[in-house]
Image (cartoon, rainbow, N blue to C red; front, top):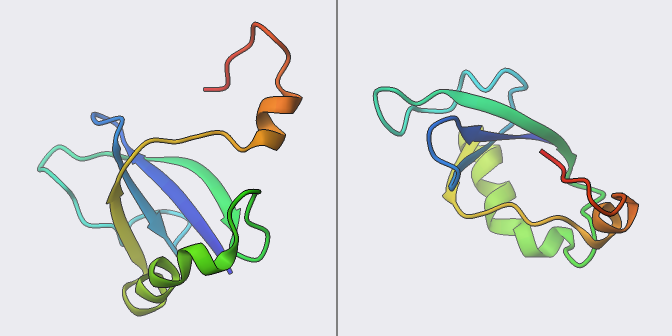
Length: 91
């Protein structure tokens, strides 16, 4: 299943996952919430060190509601970090 990661434009720690590429099914957190697309994720190919079992509850909510809201921070997989040349930052 392809799921889409969005971030609240005004809050670096508010995220949503959606089954809809447009994100229009994600409810607003505040009246000014503007969801910004971050990336598409394939639930079959989670990056190391995670696997699909780590996200079973999230995937169940996505199947039931079509979206999942959470607070957190993005961390790069070791594969992305290894491919990023020194001195460059991914945005």
